[in-house]
Amino acid sequence: MSRITRLSNLFLRTLREDPADAELPGHKLLVRAGYIRRAAPGVYTWLPLGLKVLRRVEAIVREEMDAIGGQELSFPALLPREPYEASGRWTEYGENLFRLQDRKGVDMLLGPTHEEMFTLAVKDMYSSYKELPLTLYQIQTKYRDEARPRAGLLRGREFVMKDAYSFDIDDAGLEAAYRRHREAYIRIFDRLGFDYVIVHADSGAMGGSASEEFLAVSPVGEDTFVRCEASGYAANVEAVVMPQAPPVDRAVVDATPGAHVEDTPDSPTIETLVAQANALHPRSDGRAWTAADTLKNVVVMLTSPDGTREPLAIGLPGDREVDAKRLEAQVAPAEWAPFEEKDFAAYPMLTKGYIGPAMLGEASTERGGSGIRYLLDPSIAVGSAWVTGADEHGKHVFDLVHGRDFTADGTIQAAELREGDPSPDGAGTLTLARGIEMGHIFQLGRKYAEALDLKVLDENGKLVTVTMGSYGVGVSRAVAAVAEATHDELGLAWPRALAPADVHVVATGKDQAIFEHAEGLVTQLTEAGLEVIYDDRPKVSPGVKFKDAELLGVPTIVVIGRGLADGLLEIKDRSTGERREVAVDEAVTQVLAEVRGEQAVAEAAAARSRA
Image (cartoon, rainbow, N blue to C red; front, side):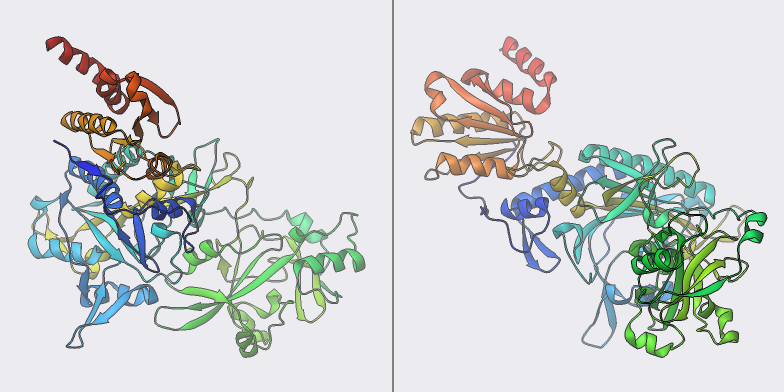
C-alpha cells in the first residue's frame, strides 16, 4: 500500500508572502510551498515534499540510464587534489573550485564534476578491449563556488547532478555511445514534461568534439540560443560560428579614398561619433552615417587560472556589443574583465574613447603601438571601409580599409547575435530565445584518458588510449525548471510524473462525518496504488486549505465538504482549473480515471462486474 501524507503531521509550513531573497516565480513558490528552504547563499535544504519531487526526477533518470546499459556507482564528494592536478583542472577551475585541507595539510576539493574519478576507476579495474564498451553513471551532489549564486536551484553552489561516462576502444564506439545517450536524454526530457530544444553547444573546459545541450525553453533561462526555422539549425549562442564575410570587390576598394583623419570633438562613444560625423563630415553619397559604419575597438583584460594577465582587443561593428557569454567561451579557461583606468595607465598609447587599429595588434610595437593582440569580428570583410578611432582625443579616421590600411591577428566569435541575423548554415534567418540548461552531452575523446594514462590492450595486444564520452543531467535543476514552466498565479502545478502525490484530498468543515468519509476515500485510493496527500487538519479554515492545495500543486484535488450531504464531492484539475462534482460511490473510479486515464475506468468497471 502506498503511503498517506497527512498535513496534520507533515513537516511543512506554507508562506503567504514571497521570500525576500527569491527572484524567479518558480523559486518563490518552491519556498512558499515548503519544498525547499535556503540554508546559505546558493545552498538549499530539501524539505519532505521537495525531496519527493527530487526523487521522482532521479527515478526517471535512473530508469533511462539503466535501459541503455548504464551501471550506477557513487563517488565521494570529498576528493584528492592529485587527479585534478593531472588533468589541469585544479588550476583551470580557478575560484569556482571549493578547496580545503585536511588536518595534515593535504589539499582536497569538493567535487564539481567527476571525469577524473571515473577515468581512474576504469583504469584501476579494466585492462582489455574485451571489457569495453562500458557506461558508468552516478547521481550525486556537486559543488561549485559560484561568485553570484542566484535563481534558487538554477544557479547554486551545491546541486544534484547525474553524470555518466562511456568508455570505448575507438571513435566509432564513442559515436554509438553518444547516440544511445542522446536518445535516452530525449526520453528523459519527454517524461519530465517541459518544452525543450536540443542545441549545438560549446565544449568549454570539458574539451572534446561534438557537444549538445538540452535546454528547457523559458523566458527566465540564463542561456540564450538561436534557431533557424527553415533548416532546424539550433545552437547555444556560445557555439554559433558566424561565417567570414566575403572580401569586398577589388574595384570598390580601389575607388575608396585614402584614409584621412578628421576632427570629431567630444565623441568618445559610438552615438556621439555618429552625430559628429553627420554634422561635420557628411557622406558624399547623401546617406547618413550610422553606427554600422563605425569600427568599435573594445579592450578587455584576461586573467588566466594561474593569475597571468593579458589584454585583448576586439574589433566589431559599432552597432554591436560584445556578448559576455560568447567572449567567455572564446577565452576560457581565462576570465575576462573590462579594461580599467589602471590598465589604460599601463598602456598610454591607447586613448580611451578613440582607440584605433593603428595602436593594436602584435606587430604594432614596431610603430610605437601597444602590441595588444587584436582580433576582429568575422563580419569585418577584407576591403571594407570604416570610421574608427585615430588614437587621439577628438579625432577619428575615415575610409580606413581592412587589408589595405590595417590588419588584425585573427578573428573572434564574440559579437552579440540578433534576431534576423543570417543563419550560419545559409538556410534562413535566426530567431533568439532563452532556455535553462538541463543536460549536456560531449564526445570527450581522449583528453582525460591521456592525462590519467587510461589504456587497454586492443585485439592485437597493443596498448591504446580509451576514448570517452560525458553525459550530464541537472537533477535538482530539473525541479526548478519544471516549477518555472508549470506554475500559475495560484501556485505550483506539477506534471503527474513529478508531483509529490497523485491526489490531494481536502476535508473541509467541522462535521465529523466529512473526516470519516475522507479517511475511507483516502484508504481506498492508497489501496488502489495511489500516493495521497490528505489535508486532515481539524482547525484550519476551508479557505486556507484551498489555498494550500493550489500552492502545493498536486495534479488532482478532491474536496469533501458540504456536498457530502447530497452524496457529492468535487474533483479539480489543478492545471486547467476545471472542477466537476461526482457521486460519492463513483469517487474512486473517477479519481483513478483522472490519474491513470481511460484504462483505469475500464479496469475498475471490470472489477465491479467480477464482484
